[in-house]
Length: 119
Image 1 (cartoon, rainbow, N blue to C red):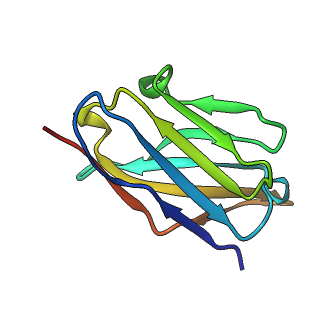
Image 2: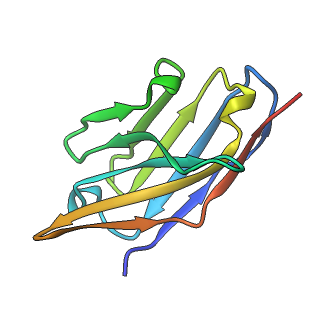
């Protein structure tokens, strides 16, 4: 059973920074990709950023240039550095790990961590 444990959320003023961490029970190389999604109240969950074991990254347009996804040297913890935060970044952020196996895609999720951007 894959476990993903997030940390690092909180309350920050607009323009501030936060770093989210996701500790996985398996190496990133055991997944096709890992990443972060977020869900704001009344909205659907949306992709924020993903990273592969080879270091390929992908970002949603609204966070490009502000957020950076990375993985530690042990390849078991994924980070999301969030700079220049805006009120519209307020959401519950979820860590995700994804595997593609014959015939289907399997997603694993963390419990979520709240990020609130407000003055």
